[in-house]
Each structure stands twice: as structure tokens, then as C-alpha cells.
Length: 605
Image 1 (cartoon, helix red, strand yellow):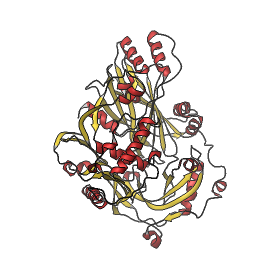
Image 2 (cartoon, rainbow, N blue to C red):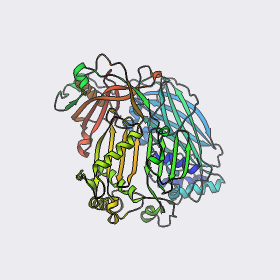
Image 3 (cartoon, rainbow, N blue to C red):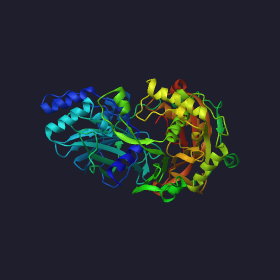
């Protein structure tokens, strides 16, 4: 697989933004001239990724009174965050790995409440080289023409060095030598006055739980950047490594509720819906199930989605990428299938930035999405509940050339081919001609005219839609799994009379054979009580306004013996309204192990 495609695979699984720092340019130029640098750091954006791995071993640390991690997060995320981390478990790691012309060192990690937070340093092997954070490098075509990017280019020209993008992201985590599981990860990169990059990360999710030792698989990435705003072909270097550490307490915690009875005194015992399986009503318990890791790459056949023939095929460890003769693209990983239609045209990715920010910005040409892709995007924003589509609901079971029943049948047939069972339709929207035009107009006003949003995607004229563009946007979820993020399988489709024209499918685990049922489970009332206890000691300090539902279901978690892999365990999923949600109109959730009552994951994590 070529470098451009490797980079694209990484970015396809990431979410990032840009935040300019007007002080960076003057500091970089001052460095080049030998002047005293301005004491500021470059503040850049959040990136979510999924990547690969191999192994290096780190070391545990002794008890410390202060923490680099706590200090860093205190500086960039506020005093409360830093103080909260200061009372976690710490390990000084100090393990280094060289990737290309850059040395990455993971300096320190902190574990607290099912989260791992890390800080490290990336340094150029040759002091002449200039390091660029991934956040900036991701949109180097734009940044290279801004003041900050030009300053870095100028510095590299003065030192006669290379511009090198750097990035480090946690991929998987193991607990007590148990199964390595993919995590939710946020990365925040800072360019320092000495030219090094401080990389930081937060990893959380169902993969993490209390343990003695932790294993974190990190993905390291470097690439040379050109002064023309492009990545130098053949320069991308990827490497992964696993660091093991045993964190210890830094200090005695002070945030535990002073009186648990006070915290739980006014917990409601009714006023919310309790949903349980029939088996629980009869026996008072439900069983464990085996968790079977999914692998779409071993199952899928490209012709199931497109019969125009394959123009190009690329594969890498655990993934595959197909470009069809009609320019549609299929992207496959063990847990993911993405299918989208494109045209044979190109669009200038920089058009909006040139229009809004810099009229001298040069074009950056990319493949243009097909009209079907843009309509699917509009429908997906309705599902997210954006204001421009408020009160839009399903209405029509028959479109000009397609019925809802036929669309549902097509989606279920695809899920059957992919061996997806236990999925139910949880959201649907009919996109008839009038709705495409109406929502398309509102979508354009939101993203291109109102100033509420910014996108580099091409603008489409939805008034040009015809009856052939009509379709149904359907979302199916794995109802047997409680996870509201990566642990719950989901399948989204946009289906027209031509068939499936858009698909986004994720599934990490399928439910296997039934195992033994626990003797007893905690009650729904105890799950609600646990919510109040956990949110009282959480870092965000939210308040529960109202419990909405409490559901007994299953979720993949680590087996009691972590070396035994994963199981679907009984869990209580609590949906509630907190103070922020009450103001902004969204629900929060928390998931508790129904056997031992431990928190598995929550929005306040």
C-alpha cells in the first residue's frame, strides 16, 4: 500500500480541528535569528485514531509528589483537571523508540478511574530538522501558506533541515497481561520553544479497568513535508510499540464523597422505566455469553456492494481498500466496512479556506464525492439532531421508485451476508425529492452561509435532485450489546432504487455461545445508586437531574481472569439527564457490571 493510502487510512479514522497560534510564527523566527523566544506554546487540536502494533517494554516508577501529566493537563485543560490527575496512579516510563529521523520518548503516564493519560516528547535526531505536529501536518496544504506554517518552512530553510511531521497515538490497551483492546483516544500536541514536540493523550473506554499492570500499544508516525504543501512521496514511516508499566498512587485522594449516605439519600426509587429480559423476570439472572471477535476482511466480497468491476485493490495487515470502475470506494477493516460513491471529477479541498481566510491559497485537488454521498451526509446530520433539521421525522413508506420494505430487505440481506445477527432498525428517514431539496437548502445555509459551521467539502445544488436520487437512510444497532460507543455494533445505509449507495458498518464482537449465569445480579435500584456515587466523585462534577431508563442487557468486557479474553457480561445501562443535557437537549448514560456493580463506562468518564 503506498504512503498516500496509508496516511488516508489513518485520517479516515480520525477527527481533528485546527487552532491557529499567532505567537508561534514570531517565536520560530526568533529562534532562527538567535533571539530570546516568546514563552508560549502551540495549542493544537484533538485527534481520534485507530492503528497497528509490536513491542518495547517500559518500567514502573516510585511514589512521586508531582506529575508531568498533571502539570501538562493543568496548563492546557484547567486547574481542576490537573488536580484531579494529581490524585491518580503514576508511572514514569522513559522508554524511547526511533522512527525515521525522530526519537519518541513516553515520559510519564497516569491512571485514574478507568482512564490512562500520558505525556511524551518527540525530538529530531538531527537538530537542523524542524518538527511539525500531526494536527498541523494533516492540513499542511493550508498551514504551509499561513503565517505559522511559513515560519516553520523559513526555519527549515535557515537551518538547511527537513520539515518532519510527528504523531503518537495509543491504539490498544491490555490490563494484567489480558487481551489488547482498541481504545478511544484523544491526542493533544504542543510545539515547544526548543523545537521538540510534547505529545499527550487520553485513553478510555471499556478496554480499561482497575488492574496492577497495564500494556499500552502506541502507534508512532513520521513523514517529511514539502514546502509545496504536500507530503514527500515515500517518506511516511509507521511503527508501533507496546509499553508496560505498573502505576502507583501519588497522594491520598480528597475527592471521595464525605458521606455516601448524603450522596444517595434522595435517589429516586421510581419515575423511570426499567427494562429487563423475560429470563430475568423468571430466574432473577441472565447468563454470560462468549464474545467472538469480528473480522469483516475474511467475509466480505466487493461484488456484494458494487458489480462495476475493480479498478484498483490495495491491502495491508488486517485491512483492504477497493476502487471500483465507477469510482466508488470500499474500505474494510476487521471491525469496519465503509462504502461510498465518488465521481471522476476533482474538487479543490482548499476552496473554502481560500474564500474565507486566504485568497492566495493554492488548490489542493481531491476526488469529488458523488451526489448520493452528499444526500447521505445530509440525512446523517438529521440523525445527529442538528438544529437545521429539527422535528424532521419518518413519513413515507413509498418513494417514486423504492419502497421502505424493499430498502429494509436490502439492508438486512447485506447484514446477513456479513454474519451480523441481533441487529434491529433503530432509526429511519425517508429522503424523497421534496425533502432532499428542503433539507439540502437548510444544510447549505448551516455550513456555508450562517457561520455556524465550516466545511471544505464541495457544495451541492440539491434543487438538481431527481426521483432517482430518492432513498431511505436506515440505522440498525446491535440490541444485545449495551455499549453506546465502539462496543455496540451499528450499521448505517443509504439505499436508493439502484441499491446500497452508502454504508458504514462497525462491529467488534458478536455474541457467541451461552455460558454460565451468575447466581445473583445487583438490582436496578442499586445501579441507579451506583450512578449517583460515581458521578459525585467524577472529574466533571455533573448533577443528575432525572433518570429516564434502566435496562438490563449485555456488553463485551474482560473476563474475570483477564487472560481468558472477552465475554458478554450482564450489565445495567442507565440513561439519565444531567444539568448540561437539560440545557442542551441530550441524554447521558452510564453502564455498570450487573454482577459486581463496577462502572464500565459513562459519559462523565
